[in-house]
Each structure stands twice: as C-alpha cells, then as structure tokens.
Length: 244
Image (cartoon, rainbow, N blue to C red; front, side, top):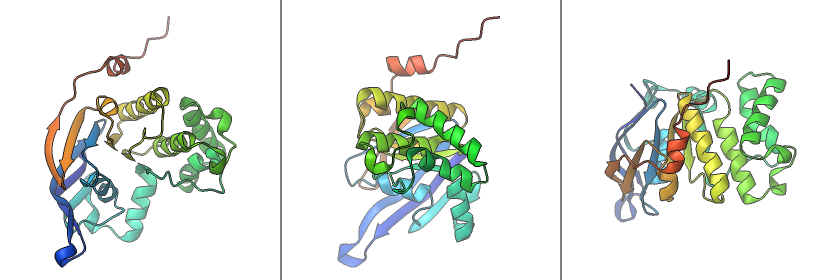
C-alpha cells in the first residue's frame, strides 16, 4: 500500500491570460521504505509537488492521500497535527528558528509531540553527530555556514518517528562528503519505513533513489529505476553481525 498518493493533482496560479499551470493531472505514489527522486528543469513544478504533498498548499483539483487519509477531508488542525507528527520537511531556505541553537532546532518538533526535553535532546544530538555537527550543537543559525544550516534542517526533518520525508534540494549547499552523509541518513530513514521524496537536480544524488520521476511543465513525463552506484551498493549491504 502506498503511504503517499497524489491522484490527478493539478495546481494553477492566477487567472485568464496570467494563469500558470504548475501541475497538471499528476499521478504519483510512494510506498513506505521507498526513496523517490524528482528531477526536472527550473519551473517544472517540482517544489509545488512537494508543498502539495505535505499539505502546505491546496491543489486546484485532484486528491492527496497520506497513509490512507484524504487531506481534503481533514480540518486545518488535523493537517497541522499531521505535518508536525508525520512529515519531515527540508526547505531550500532551511526555515531554522534564529533564536534556538542547532540542537534546539532539531529537538523542538519532538518536544512539541510530548517527548521529554532530555530524550528529545539526546535524539537531536545523535542526528547531529551523524551529520558531523555535534561540535556545532550549541551554535545559533547565524553562527553556522550555509552547509551547516542545511545539515541541521535535514537532521530536524529526519529525527523522530516521522513516516514521510519531503526534501527540496537537500544537498544543494554541501560538498560531496557531506552530501553522501545526507544520503546515508535518508536511506537509513527509509530502512525504518519512511517514504522519502527528494527534489534534486543532482544526478549523483538521484542515483541513490529507488525510482526517479521526471517532471516538465507540470507533467510527469517519465519514471525510471536508476542503475546502482558503488556507493548505493555499499549502502545496501546488511549491517555486520556482532561477534558471538
């Protein structure tokens, strides 16, 4: 069963001569544990697909279903609860809270869900350590580089028990080493059952995905399974068993 479904979703902005069709009758589904990359030229509708999938925007027509529940049948409070508890976002502009440290930014969603401050902080530190940011945990966003802020945003999106990850160019400001660390975190989340949708222009990043969807002028024009890379083959190896 698909965890996320877009059923004939269209999105238009403006009216008359100025009307823009950002998405046109998009059918799209992602299963739990699956990693889907979305590629396409600038202005093709990739980011609009993400915001509609995560209930941040309403489609002009069509339906979005998350874990069997149609978003159109949810109240505003229900959607807010869904976003807080179920969906992890990585935005291009990061959306970090300036008055909170890196660790506090990562732990805040967990605390809002009722996790104790101690457990939330521990989970945040674990995520930051995996992305090489443990030594930056007490720094505020304006004290971090662009790449560091991006990794904090990724840690915040992945930490906890969310089941849908929506990421817009998550490796855009990162070097190859940090980009690979991000990909490994996304793959680890998928192994836990997370459904991941990642918008990217980076073919190397897309090669880690189970499926690549190509979008142009608001239409899905192709889908393919990328060939395995050496890195993805290593990532797919089982964890070594502890010695008896």
